[in-house]
Each structure stands twice: as structure tokens, then as C-alpha cells.
Image (cartoon, rainbow, N blue to C red; front, side, top):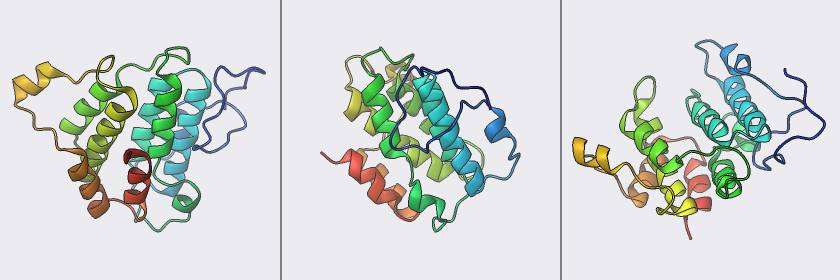
Length: 187
């Protein structure tokens, strides 16, 4: 754990676990190939650390990592720390003004992530990324955070609509994940 300065750059995200100090990549790497409940919680802790450190884009990457967890959906950790859609939207809302650190373009990030997903549980992780893509567009708007039109044209990329992404996450995701996604995504 990295010592916490007395004045963090950003206030803690209320939708992520509280942390007592800053963390680095070893927090999640220590789990190796085991991506269970402890990995999930540590990915959320690392996201909080990155957010507090003024690195919203890195915090979002750690939220992506949390969705790599191999959970059945009934683990107690999901009761206290459900799928982090609320944290994602909160971070984007709070970083959109540019005064909370580098945010990048979450819309483009999630488009690329969803369309290039590989590895374990790639299908559900891709649907989660599409859902996050739509949440990013709804939260940030398209003007300052556009889609990657070149990829869409070059690859003939089909972008599923929000209802389809939500449905697939509900069918294939963790228990309660549909409700979490809908809570922040439905106007």
C-alpha cells in the first residue's frame, strides 16, 4: 500500500469501498489467475485509489477489471458492493468537467473494449462493455466524447442498442446486475 497524502485530489466515490491508503497494481496482481470475490473487491479498491489519486481513466480501467471476476452472482460481496455501474456513472459525472484528472473518452474506450473482447467470459464482458458504452453516452453526451466512427466504418461495426445490452447483461450477468445497470441507465 502506498501512503496516502493528507489531502487527496478527489473525494472518495460513495459507490466504491472505503480505503485507508493508496494502492498500486500489486493489489489485484497478487490474485494471479484466481479471479474470485477477493479479486473483485480488490479491483474495486484499486479503482477507488485511482479515482482519489486524480486518475479517473485509470479508475474506469479498474472497474473493467472488476468485471473480469469469476463470480456466480450469489457471493456476499455483491450484496455490499454490487456490479459497479453506479460507480462508473458517478466517476464520469464528476470527471466530465476536466478538473478531476484525465478522463479520456469513455465512449470510445467502451466501444473498443466491447468489440475486441477476448479471454475468459468474453461474451458477458462484451455485453457489459456495451452497456457501459451506452451509460457513457448518456452521462457524457456525444459532442465531447464521440464514438470511433473510423472503426465503425472500417469494420462495419454493429453497435447493439441500450435495451439489447441491458437484456443480455440481465440474462448472462450476475444476480442483481440487471437492476444495477437499469438504475443508472434508465432516465
